[in-house]
Amino acid sequence: MKIKNAKQLKKVSKRKLLLLLSMSCFLFTNAQQSWIRINQIGYLPDGVKVAVWGGREAEVPKQFYLVDSVSGKTVYTNKVGKNFGAYGPFKNTFRLNFTSFVKGGIYYLKAGKAVSPSFKIAKNVYEGSADFVLNYMRQQQCGFNPFTNDSCHTRDGYTLYGPMPDSTRIDVVGGWHDASDYLQYSTTTANAVYHLLSAFKDFPSVFKDYFEANGLKGSNRIPDVLDAAKWGMDFWLSCIQSLTGCLIRWPTTETT
Ligand SMILES: [Ca+2]
Image (cartoon, rainbow, N blue to C red; front, top):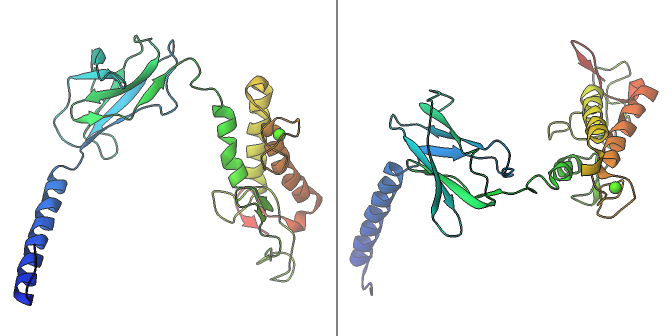
């Protein structure tokens, strides 16, 4: 459409505004009101298979459907079962149990208006998942961060309210950025180290060696879970060796 003058431009802009408003109303009235939460890793063929449906509206589905993602065909149907009632923002919640379906493949679930993301049913769904979670530990490394391939916090450790004068520079490099922020505690570091070592003790065969001790890609012939444990252990030991140089968490208070 060719616009010839300001009056016509104003008319077109008004139409566009009305169109935009009507689209917004459409989107608002069609906003999603129910969801299906699945195990995003997938499900073992012989394992328990449960998803959770949650809806904000009073309307609830009576059945759910397991659909083959490739063919689009429904391969399993079951009742939604017991209503577990309100939870969080939802008025109604149900468990969708499809444990008796054991055939491998890629599927999604449908219940009412909700459709789940696609997921796998396969024997190898947990393969690599133990090492995958170590990505988070490497991402949180303090001192050298393999995600940025750079050092951090090498010169910004200064005390406040400690036994030494305020703004005394101390070395608190190492360990992990606790809770994704700049805080670090010897207790949480010790807890993380304990769980890393405990996981390796109980399931040594699931951990591989794809990373160097500092978290960069490469092999150092040490399972990566032990590399991570040592990263935390080195920081924790430095706390013990120099109590005035690390954050210490007492049972009821925190101090430097
Ligand atoms: Ca390694």
